[in-house]
Image (cartoon, rainbow, N blue to C red; front, side, top):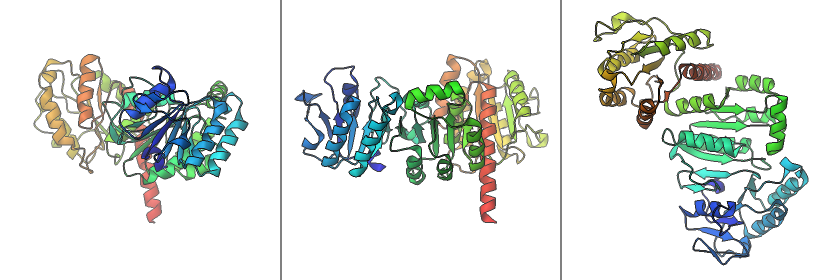
Length: 454
């Protein structure tokens, strides 16, 4: 699989000289960060200052990867040509295959690729993105892309992938991105094997519509957190999936049961998918589900408490009052620890430090009302203190997941907190739902490890 992410020589087949055309945008994106890119278009001599070639086999230099955006009826010839050149990987952006009833053409294309030892991503996809070397096969413009990080994204839908990437930008980075569309050849199972060995990947986030081999899928799950958003859950969703990528969607109840048995985390919606992924990417796994809440405005904690009560894996135990010192007289020492609207950064930091030391707390959830003047006026002190307290490099630290509700002020604080590794969620129920599933996964990992050592 490494030829897709670290190729020597990239051919763009179907390169166009017209801005706005798919072939132009792919070439522009690939060429922005590398010199060894070769446009292939028999009708042009030069595009974006680069010499054009009539075919891949005419290129003088080495070509490991071809990105193809030509009509589907031309694909077979292109794959043959790539085979003669010794290309190792092909990303087929073009549609017009199984999703529109041309399954036989898709099978023939794969058979020819295998004859030459070529692996194929696609067709009907947007391809790959590797932030480490900035390789980007997308045809989208003006995308806000994340930098390097520890999350690998695998998706059957380019649109879902784009949404996730733009949500990640400025908050967490990624290690690899693959949009595989119809997955005629390379599937998520192939990527599991690659990413399980990838030292840059800590978490895998997947959007899937179908699984061709459910047992193999589950058996090959990496020994890393895998967060899955599965669509095609209903008859209407299955019909939409079939017209999108030609997918035959799996029975959702069976899928959820198998995922629970094998330790995958299944998100209920896109927001939860995003939240779970960024918490896992930035925080250690919790040692249990005991949540300590601290706030300068109790309302959101009341909402969170209702959801914690109904959760499977979380609780909100009483705090050990004798271990909490240095707080002002107006603080209400309970769980949540209510600092009231008079709280400043120093009060929050003392409360969080006490919870960090409290052996009866596994997860720390600060609820911030940044709009309250005492906190906002001391917010720099808050950020400086949190950096010292949480130390994202401290492998023994407890997970901290912050919650704040609001608009412009909250978004700015979320951006700052993301820089030092604390996720800030904007709605209490979202935070509780995500943590509930993460604690369930942590319990599965603990059970699995105990079982393997006995």
